Image 1: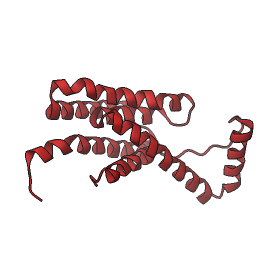
Image 2: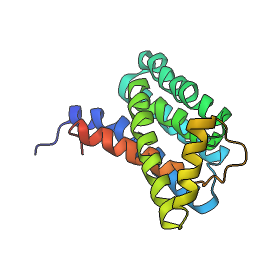
Image 3: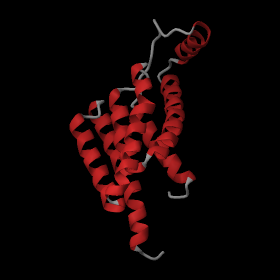
Length: 171
């Protein structure tokens, strides 16, 4: 493989986006939060990478990625499916990776999150609770009184991104 500056500039946003998600996973596992100070650092790193690769003219398009992260994940936050930290993480990620990456990562991340949630529930010995919850939600359409299990969703987001990179042939 030969080294070229063109290849390097194309990979900077993907590397920064990956670093943002890894930082989010580490912060989530340490404190069960994505801290505001880390969000600001991630936004700054994403903004600098956008400016370094595409210049000022690339910034309005990058902002669409940030807005997509908020727009897609805000309803999930309001429904208490995910935490606000996950939305902030996706906003910072979207600034670096773009709105299309946010869409794909949201889809694959939700799939990974569902898989992790089911596995965590089963491994904790709460398979019956899982079935009861699913039937209640589908049949009664109500979440009140359900025993819900939380997982660190940042890992599902990172796995969604790795899925996107793999499908693009970048990993």
